Image 1 (cartoon, rainbow, N blue to C red):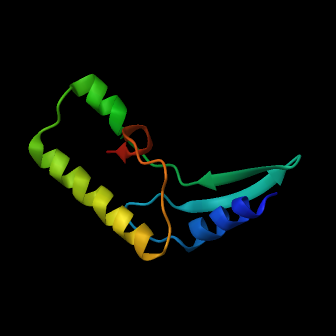
Image 2: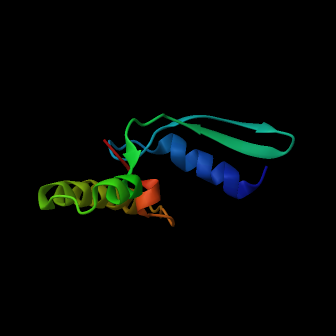
Amino acid sequence: ITQSFENEVDCLRASNHPNVVRYKDSFTIGGFGFIQMERVPGRSLIEIIISEGCLPEEECILIMQQISSAVLYLHSRGWIHRDIKPDNIVYD
């Protein structure tokens, strides 16, 4: 297992924010590392946009506030996400 995998696991373990998915466990099998995260109900934001089209402004504001809050939290810890996109945002 690489040091970057261990670093990611350490960051996930230390993370505690209502808009950031929670770490559950990690393990290795045959030299491959796996990370188990909490199951989050809902659909990805991209699925919702594709199926419903434009979202109401009030919902967009709420989504952006939650994303901004999560990113601010991550940055305050010295972490970056590097893959923020509608596919990786679960919305309920």
